[in-house]
Amino acid sequence: DGGITQSPKYLFRKEGQNVTLSCEQNLNHDAMYWYRQDPGQGLRLIYYSQIVNDFQKGDIAEGYSVSREKKESFPLTVTSAQKNPTAFYLCASSAYGGANSYGYTFGSGTRLTVV
Amino acid sequence: DQQVKQNSPSLSVQEGRISILNCDYTNSMFDYFLWYKKYPAEGPTFLISISSIKDKNEDGRFTVFLNKSAKHLSLHIVPSQPGDSAVYFCAASARGNFNKFYFGSGTKLNVKP
Image (cartoon, rainbow over all chains, first blue to last red; front, side, top):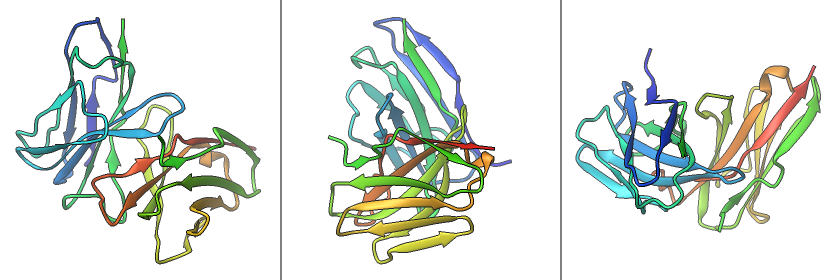
């Protein structure tokens, strides 16, 4: 079955630590995205990548970093510079460099909590 | 500042009746709109879309209406079924920039049997 897998489902981070959230897709999609969801707010775009070895900042990229060394993988690192990292993180992918009329395919998310 | 707003955090409807979920946007450059459905512990899944050249798009029990002058769209579900109980997000993009969708905060729909 093709899909997009995020791991882990739950992640706890101590203050000052960097953590990396995994996102893997086997849909052969070109573009991948990271969104953040906070209570009462919509999904906000952190980073996106249209092709391997290239990525662009979204609206809230500060304190985050990404890499796109393989088409299938788009890991997100939440660095210690991110002041308020506790949130629900969603990874998505789409074909042909952007969402078409069918939108994105989302993973099931990672809930990150700072302890 | 949120450019896409869903002002009703929750909605409760009886099975068989109509569910109407609303979404407002502020950016007049938005020209493509999507609705997503999300079950607990799962990612959102695409439901239906509409472009600004249309004012209505229908897919089975789901219809999306777009009122460009009011910067408002709505999702109608008729008839509502208990399996429709989920969180619904609307999303918008500008000038075909599909790499950048703006999402609302979601409306949790509960369809009572």
